[in-house]
Length: 127
Image (cartoon, one colour):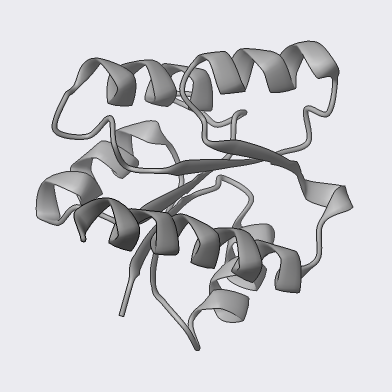
């Protein structure tokens, strides 16, 4: 079962996303970037779902740190954010996000499809 690491400080949204994904993936939810890196030390995730606005270490800081670490830079990061402005989306993509989804604009089915696409690409890269 693929391991998904969800970094989201909104506990209500984190519980909804986690519940939606748990039937298909091993989902671990954390509240911020500091906890995300603590969790990565316990085990590398297959995909990271990342909010941009979080306490302690925001999503942009997480992306910068992931990109700098060669052992982590290949983990696909799907940003889930309320920052829908083109400049914010472009900044997240430039910082290393594989894709950006605005929270109010996607369905659970679309989230599943994107995660599965990332996982398929990873399998193809390792084949």
